[in-house]
Amino acid sequence: MLVIDWRDNNHMKIFPKMFIQIFSVLLVITLLIHLFVFLIFPKPYLENRKDEIHAKADEISANLNGQSLNYIEESLNFYSKNSEVKVSLNKQNNKNAVPINEDIGIDPTSNSNSLIIEERTITLNSGEDIDVQFMSTTDMQKDARDLSFKFLPYSLLLSLLVSVIIALVYAKFIKNNIEEIKSVTDDMMMLDKNASLTVTSNDEIGDLKSQINELYFTLLESIDDLEIKNKEILKLEALKYDFYRGASHELKTPLASLKIILENMQYNIGKYKDRDKYIKNCIEITDELSQNISQILSLSSIDHLKEDEADITINDVLQDIIEKYRVISKQKNITIHNKLLDEKIYIGDQALKIILSNLMSNAVKYTDDYGEINIGVDNDWFYIENTYEKIEELDTAEIFDVKFDLNKQTSNGLGLYIVSSLLDNYNKQYRIQKNNKRFIFKIYINR
Figure 1 (tube, rainbow, N blue to C red):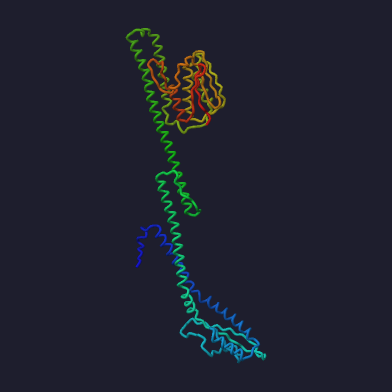
Figure 2 (cartoon, helix red, strand yellow):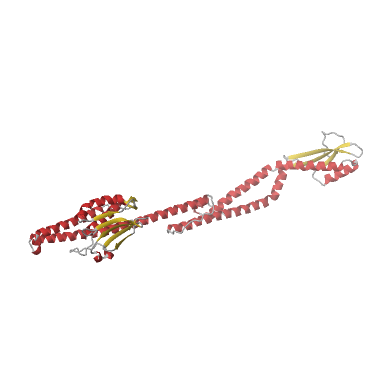
């Protein structure tokens, strides 16, 4: 005997649970339909019975009309014996009398008997009219019950079979969708970027699959954004580490030189007795220290030099920077040609100021006396060009590295290192060129 413990229903697998639920619903619906048919069947059955007797009475009356009385009596007696409908002649022509000369099938123990009477008038061959009464009794509930029981096993069996098939198909459909969702979401948990649910319908299941796909794609985009930000943070940390490591050496070198010069001046050692000359050197070293400290302070907010990009007009920023170096350039008789108009570059405002300031500082510092500095844009490349007599001695392969030398003959400062680091941070292309004793620094300004 099969016993189902409904308390364990929550622990069942989805397929048997869905099958039992759907089959139970269909079974209840089937039983209700059969019960409904059983209860309402008598009334339409009686009406159908009346229609049949009415039609049969019309047909027999039409066939017997104009026949002899003996022929009519024999025909009606034969019909009555072989049919559930009983026929009698009313020779007294009393329409209110219903003669019952034989058993017409009335069950005296039943409370649901119905007597159906149809009366017709037939004209004999002699011209005389006689009344013919067609009578039939029916026990509606008994007939309905007998008819129902006759077809009930087949209808129930067919209904159960259909219910099982529907329950199996629907439960299998739900199970397949849930297994697909489970399988694909397992892949999504492993962050498989190709994982995606196949949407084949516009119903609630299709909407659920679409929503899961959108949720997963949004999650992947968020993860990608986080990875990009993490890489930027690591890159920024490396940039800061390299910068401060280089900056510390860049500060130590002139400080060491300054200390050596001052100590030798203090004890009047050798050439350092010429104090006026070496005081000038000390001032130059101090100026270099001041410039390096200024560069370090300009990058103290390097954490904020990202995600602040905008289309900035280069000339608006450059004019203020040129003005700051106007005095130094005049002391060296340097001519500055600014050919910029309204060209723009997509970059952070603070970063652009630092880049242009370092490039102008290098250009003014290394341009020969009576030299020139040219600034402009050529084929989407912004350039700063300055004359430099010792251009052939310049090693462009290591120009962006921070390299130190006490004698400062082969030393590279922080300027171009800072410029290259910032341009890399904003993914900007840049290059340097040597051409006819000219040093050219170029930045690609088109997106």
